[in-house]
Image (cartoon, rainbow, N blue to C red; front, side, top):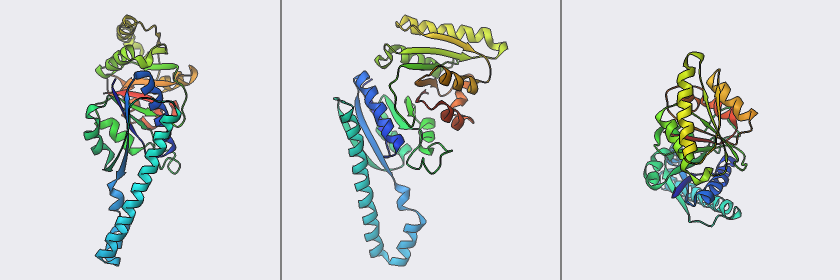
Length: 281
């Protein structure tokens, strides 16, 4: 892994995202780019449109220029704060900060071509005002990017125990191979888990053993479990009861595991886990 792309908006979630990125980059020996995107829509809201009509074109342009300058100052503060998080973490690798004007999803299409992992908080700067909602930018990025994406939680803790939720899909296999090969997961406790209905138990056990083989051949000695019940409930319960520090899974696959993040139970799963989630397409 050569480069991490870290998305921040200056929120508490964005700051924690930088903490996880510093931890990850140090273990992976990766360079880091911190990205802050000014949402261009804030300059197109009705207030700005009304100003253009009531003030006249020249005063309006002056006000718009002031708004843009304030946003530039805000971006500088956010990126300086993010850089400081890496410095306080003792990160010694290559670090770049970038400010763009646009929409995050569109910007990432150009920025992520040379990155190996995208990191972002699961909620953004309005988190304290909309506590029951996930960040809309996060959901759009996860749906649109082909890169692995680490969605971080509200608070940071060292990663020691990793839950790898496996359903046999191609993205889940990719997740298993990543965990097996990445130096980031070296010496961490890996739990390999699948959830199966009774009639699927034989097939589930077979795919679980195939994933276990990949890990063991790479020198990883996983804790292997097959659970029964409602997938969302069982995965969330395992994260809590076994004190997992991260959930790793494919974003798309054969079974209901894929719906934990991308489908109808997105919000509930991320809220209940309260740990970072590493997603693979």
